[in-house]
Amino acid sequence: MYSIGQFAKKTGMTIRTLHYYDEIGLLKPAHIDAIGRRKYSDKELAAVVKISTLKYLGYPLDEMKKLLHADRGTLKESLQWQKKLLEKKQLELQQRIRSIEHTAALLDGNENVNDSILFSFVRNAQLENKQMEVLADKMPENLKPILHISDADKIEIEKIYVNKLLAMQELMKQSVAPNEPVAEQFIHEFITEISAYFPLNSVREQDDLEELNQAIDQEEALFPYPLSEQETKWFQEAAEYYWEAKR
Image (cartoon, rainbow, N blue to C red; front, side, top):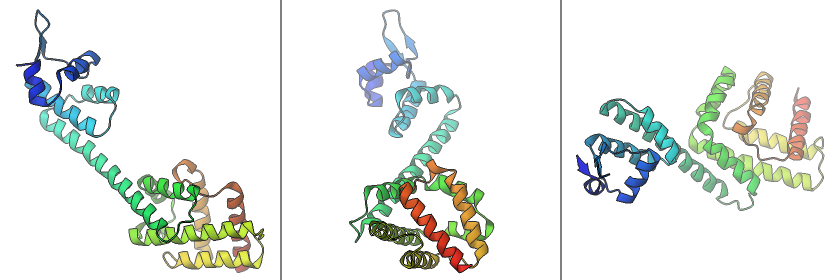
């Protein structure tokens, strides 16, 4: 058994922290003697390792308490549990790094990106894993190759998307209507540039893509959209005019 001073020295915690963890029920001593002195065992040392892991992962104290009390396995099982938590955190960190890289790439050479567009791309990058799960479930088989494009191609597609959004906003400032030839040319250029990465070879694929877009619209929180309602309406109408002319 360790005295509270010995235990504090061994774990790197302060005596004050150990008192506090005892008070909130996060880390109780193994024994308290008749005069109130706390004693700790090796079992509490194992708990400190778990607490350190959870603290590193950013869990609040109340969540740490629930997780610690739920973890009743052997030391080996506990280590496996901690490893899974760390792997989850690692994936989250990798996702955040990718979102930063994507954002930096979007800003490279283009300082006119507004906050709404920028936020939507950052948020979409953070939600990418969940988005892929939804897309894999709802996407028609003939469109699924879209899911396997490289990170480098994704960045290039996002650059195209941003540039075209800015170009569309400029057309709207000039009061260009969605059925005007310049709007049709805009849609044609947009589709041509995007299709270099995943070509739409038939009207059937275009219809499938429209069905997919409708499914995505039902998951609005998972797919943040950078456009205002007015901009969305303009783009949709321009696209409808374009595809009608192509049929």
